[in-house]
Image (cartoon, rainbow, N blue to C red):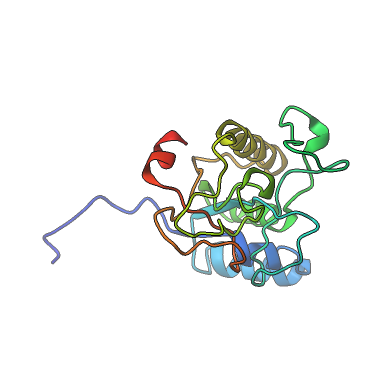
Length: 205
């Protein structure tokens, strides 16, 4: 109905996440051609890029996710693991070179005219979860973030985002700490990162 109008779209775009994790490591010519097709003026002309802050499974975990699904985390474990070893205030516990594939895509999108950048998380890092996996809890109806980890998870998200911005020159417009939380899709051993959040947990976060 042409007479029924809403506000204009602010832009259109795509989540980076899996495809960017893979294709960001392609040869320059090949990934540049793909970036032109998606964000270039002669291509689709996308204007929004949605960046996924990966949680990251333990290095000891046998790979089990779909291609591109294991988005790298921004943490670094410099020594033997111990309970609650990660300290967001310790530079040695961060990997400043993490997630090169998605970061390449952020700079490529910006260079081609993208002007809106959003960030989101599918899961906290493995060491903040009940199951020890970033794919979800053992029971998909239960939260996977441990109740004593909310502040550390917030510090992880803000610290990762700051490092992404510093390394790419991109300024983010928004950050969502969770994604599709009201489902039973996310279970330990699933093929992508995900986490159930009940309404009270969402409000707390």
